Every structure is written in C-alpha cells, then in structure tokens.
Length: 137
Length: 287
Image 1 (cartoon, rainbow over the protein chains, first blue to last red):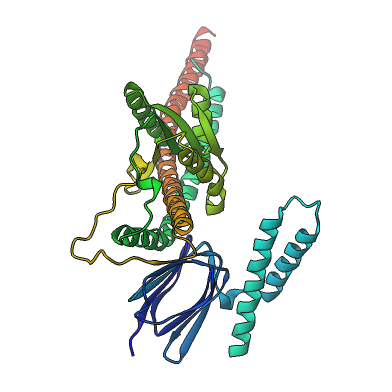
Image 2: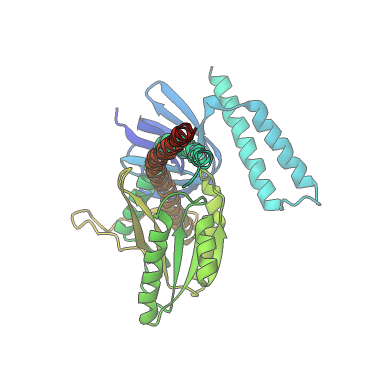
C-alpha cells in the first residue's frame, strides 16, 4: 500500500514524523482527508485533532491553529502549538472552555470578543480530541 | 605595613566572592545544556517551514510576497537580540559594536536606522547611546516563550508593510561552541531569493484555501517569527556559555588574589613575630 510522509511540528518541538496511508485533519475550510498522491494544497489548520492512519494503526494528535502544506508525497503540519492527545487533561480543557465562555459573556472583561472566541474554539477542539480518543479505546 | 587583621578580612571577603562566582559558573554550565536542547527542539519547525517556503518559491505562484521585494532603501530597522542579565563578558557589547558600525555604514549611504530591541541590556545600551527605538521586549527569562515575541515582530512587519522601513537586519550572537560566540548582523528582509530548482517542473501551483494572499501573508509572518525565535534561543545559549566562561575566569582570578594575599599575610605575621622577639631580646639585654 502506498504511503505519504507525515510530519507534524510545532514551534517548540517535533510532534510526529513518519508514514501514513491516510491523514485526517480540520482545515480552515472544513475537514479534509489526505491520501497519497494528493494534489498540492496549501491551507490553514484549524484547532482540532489530526488523525494519522497507517494500515490498521491510528494515532491522534491535537493541533492548535497553523498551516497545512500538502505535496503528492508529503504532508506537513505547521502548528503554532501542538500536544499529544494522550497527555491532555480533559478537566483542564473544560476549565479553559468555561473561562473562555465566561469571558465572552462578561462585557466588562479586558478580553476582546475575538480572542475569547478563539479560546473557546481551541478548548472545544481539545475536548473533541479527548472524546474521540476515549471512543476508540 | 598592613596589620594581620586587615589582610585576614580581605581574604575572607574575596573567598566569599569566589564562592559566588564558582556557583554561578556551575549554574551556567547546567543551563547551557538546557538551552542547547531547546535549540535542537525548535529546529524541526524552522526546517519544515523553510522547506514549505522554498516549495512555494519553486511553484509558479500567483502571488509574490513583499518580503522578497528589493525596494529603494531609505530606512533600515535593526532587530537586536541581547541578554537580560549581565556578567557574561563582552557578549552584548561586542554585538552592539557591530550593530553601531553597520548602522554608521548605512548612514554614510544616506540610510537612516531605527531599532527594535529584545533584552534588557540592549534597552539600556540604546538608551544611553541614543537612537530611535520602535519596540522593546525584555525579561524573557531562561525559557523564552515564542508568544512573547509576537508583538515586537508585528510592529516591525507593520512598519515594513507601511513602507516606513525597507530593510530589516536581525542581530544576535551565533553559537559556535561553548568557548566561542560570534556576533552576527544578518539581513532578514528582503529575504534572500530562494534558489529555483532548475530540474523540477515549475508549471504547477498550489490550490490555496482560502486565499493565496491571506495564506502566504500568514505563513511568511510565521516564518519571520520562527527566525527571530531561533535567534533568541541561540542568543540565550550564547549568554549561558559566555557567563560560564566569565565566571570561570573570575573564580581563577580570585584564587590568584587569595594566594597573593596569603603570602602577604604570612609576611606580615612573621614580621610582627620577629619584631616582638627582638623587643624581648633587647629588653632582656638592657636588664
């Protein structure tokens, strides 16, 4: 089976580097599936889980916003900050979401609306990743 | 001649200084390892983003970015990366000397300069020397956070976008090894043109989602940010290495000083004993 070279990097470390038969991620215009031989594509990366399938083996990573570059034989995720989904604490993520929601409704807060919305999206994506992992187990 | 009590006091004070410098040396030595490993960790990202950028340069892209554009230069911006703390030998001052001489060289060509500063030492230096400072970030600590640099990068890039500056230099210390650090002044914008791969077909282009301009703008900004972040990390490794060396020298000098003072102390003590003895002998002879 043909594979595609996958690398996921964040500004502070390399998250994953290896081969995959199929990769799923959330682009800025919606969910995309990347198979070997994909046409060259450059798009934004929305906060959310990135799933790398290699045969029957599947790994999930959490990525916050960034960029995806796709070439027929390789795909590169440039994440601003990425962390392994396994190491995430759901309670922590929910707490962050609550805080973000509170900041959104609280008009007197120093946080502006766009920043709060971004925080909310990120927290929601974290929870989505964790729940997806739970389901797979 | 000095008395023994004074010399003893001096020795004690130098000894306590020596203890401090040798402790600082050991702290710096352990920090070097950490900063070096951070340099390693950040490398994959810089390499990957560079790869992506060169892919874009090789494609027949529909949009060319202003960061590659060479325009008539009226004003240049120096982005100076320095340390927050002193006690690291000539590390910062060597860099500032290079920056100043480069700025003078540009001035002779009729190009004005302004400065964007990272680190406390650069801030205090350019305050005393004078100069147009557009942005300043300090107290990044031992583990610089990429987020802390975003504001400064934005200010510089916005100035470039508005045409207020035409060139940007990135100035920082390059880590050669623990004994040698090299001050570097490198041109950041305009970016050096990527070499086109002659063999590769150049008729392809990316599909951009959503818009080419928006994406490339973001990607280029990220690229510049990563270059600056890397310079900051490298400078912090240099700082620790220079500090270790400076503290090692200080510890050795203190050791030499202590040896000399001990010699003096023994001389003084012996002289006092001799004097006392001759007094006793003289007294006995008089009786």
